[in-house]
Image: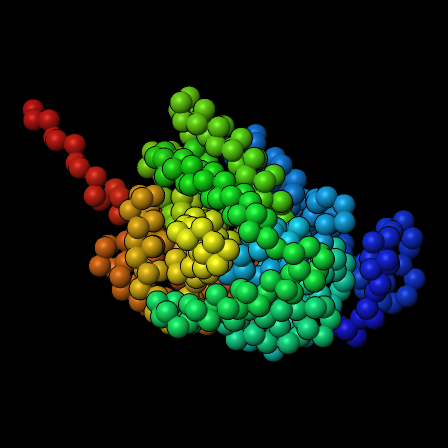
Length: 452
Ligand code: SF4
Ligand code: SF4
């Protein structure tokens, strides 16, 4: 089977009709792909919705995931707004909004696209890259096909090689990220990188970036971060007010929603969580093990790990992955009110506090994980490694040693983008949660024996 399909024109993409039966072999293959990909996404969306305790105000976030992955629609945006695809957490969305475009994060978790990409890139590449390349080759996802430009930070070897492949099909800009963020020379280089990105973005929309447009977009993102920080305070509550898998879904939806719309919806969700707190409406029991997940990205529909944690008796209270709060945790702090000051604040915000394992010195990441363990009263950590994601695998041992000193159990789970490993993962995660329950039981004060 030929995997590099003839490139469709935008017109064909925009007017794709499911009513016309596929005629050529290529069209039939595409149709089979769409059927399978939407079926898998619908199944995971159903499991998300069926997981007890979803707040009412989660519905719009679920709808966005349905629109993108089940109905394969484009992102909702004002007519004629151009899409700029981004990857990772180092591309400042503020710059994209400031030229009047819509950022869409394209890191992918699709099993079906992964199966196609598996034949396009080396076997040992990570599944995220395979899934991106699979969607790219199939040309059935508007969020990929309508991109006027893709901006890819060079964070690891997989992302670096992906740029080369993407460039053959779509305008792609590689953003060089410093490897040592504490080094001023490296940081200066990153500021210049962001300056060089500006004309590329301006070409996309024909609008020039101004001090006002950049300041406005920093404010918009600031509001999202503010809502996120409020949401985090509710996530720390014991017993839990929201399931962690649901929290991950709303963070995934952030990739496909205009920031103002997303923040507004999170504001409503925060209000609902405040009511839950007042009414003592909890979604976990007192002694339910509180689990945190860290490691390789967890991207819809690949949400088997959080689902397994919460379906086997744990409550997921912390998410330290790059699809979680990492992307919105730190606000942009503007010290110097000039245009250059704004640019430097963005360069700082998108690198210095970042806990991705792609930086040389990552003691900050260990510190952040320990801080989350304390804040969220975490009793066990699930360390997720996507097959082929070496940067996370490198860091596992250090984390295990550090958490060992704190007496916090950690389990390393390796997975791929398919369902073949689910039963094995279920057994391991279930045993891990049982172990935490036993540990908790042993630590509880014994009831005094009543004499006579
Ligand atoms: S962990 Fe960091 S470098 Fe890796 S995919 Fe996520 S954002 Fe990119
Ligand atoms: S950091 Fe890991 S998951 Fe992300 S692109 Fe690189 S290898 Fe893949």
